[in-house]
Length: 213
Image 1 (cartoon, helix red, strand yellow):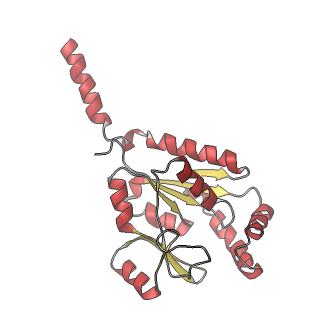
Image 2: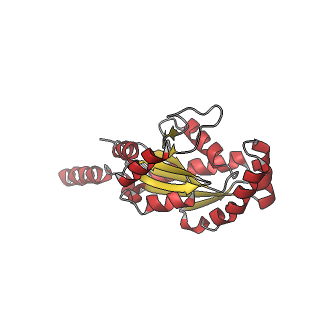
Image 3: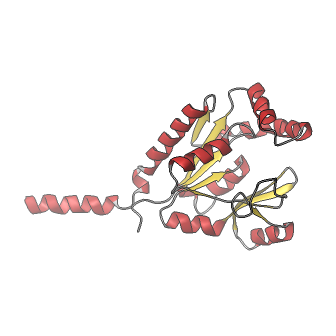
């Protein structure tokens, strides 16, 4: 049995604010953190690998997972479905492993309302400015101008949900934000209600005290 319950670490932000980069850095810092590989109906981009970046499925298969209760959360974004398969997440947290989610506010809300809500640690990343947000989207070179315009139009809807999260970080410096993120995770792991072994430890201290009395 693990001496700690696993966390569901949710990272959300508008596109371009740095959540994917910080998610990768968090796992580099602690390789025991498992990444929740989402299922999606969109086509794979160059370099993406099925089962590593996403589980690429067709729409009928995705809808069946949702109907059968096999998705922890799901959403329809930019014409495609995305979702987090429930089974591997539940198995990981029961084994005391943390699971990392790179998802939007809709997915975060669904997880907070799920049976696993007590394990949730939610963190929202804000950009330093809207101008910088667009510059980052253009710099990464993944999307054309039309898609970037759509992402920018959606960015305020994402940002408007910032106050539903446990923690909010302004990602004005990637290295500094990474350090703050790691501090949050370390502190949350030590919360009393996430250490099931504490009760037995205190009982042991009590018995030791009584034996010495």
